Length: 174
Image (cartoon, rainbow, N blue to C red; front, top):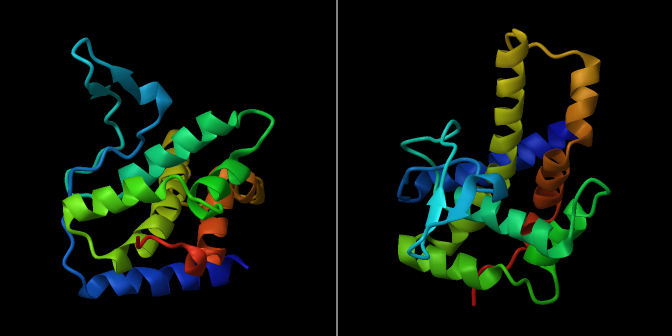
């Protein structure tokens, strides 16, 4: 149930309370339309409307790796998002693991922080979707059944649900 998903997410998030974590500038939407290659070969990022000057570590990385997984798997209008996500983070050889390990080492993140941050990445994105929807439609935080059903069908809901339900299967350590 959604209540159980929220309870599990809360329990995971509480683990972060006792950890010393850096709070980096967070872009909030590190995906294809917002990334480009600069003439010198370095990456450029645009569209900072969702940015947080004091964000959570690893969330931009998890978001980017998920978008890379979608692109690699050819996920699109016909679906394939959850399958690509699962393969990237839980597959027999999760190809994202090396990138997460390198990031965690560079940011001095405890490995125990990675799963809570991973789950929070997807809940926070869902909350952001609802917030933008409310702002655009003057809903003041109240949503009808149609909106709730739309959210439940959204790929980011599926990612959050899968992340919560399979959080104990994530293996970040070498």
